[in-house]
Length: 154
Image (tube, rainbow, N blue to C red; front, side):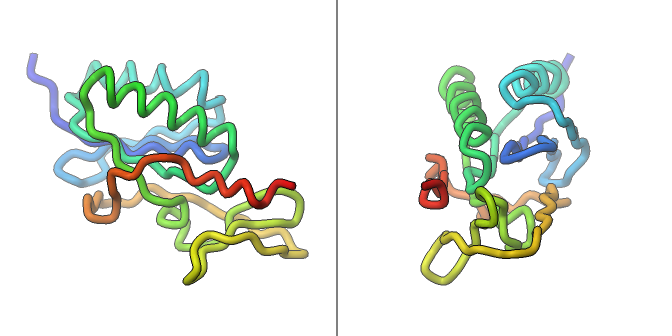
């Protein structure tokens, strides 16, 4: 049986985790779960690998939850090496329309002209991540090392 070819986008910065399946650069399937990334990412991949020939994996490399980013990166980088699947990344702001992203306490990560910084907000800011309907390869690059934004913790 010939499997359909697809690319994956993985958003594992916080709960819920989202995985998008893209055929011909169009979102055709999405998986959303509140499970822990360390538990669910291998199961999601195993399920998708049975249905699709996965050509590329794209992910948000931060900022977000330190542990979630670390788990996603280690898992996806290992897959990339073991299965010879190219891995690409972009920052998390791409998936939430450049809204502040929760760091710790009242601190949030914000994207400025200088890069990613932290800023204090007294009110709670909800940051909803979304999978794009279309996958644009040029929005990602092969610098996949996580952007933890550790400066917020301290």
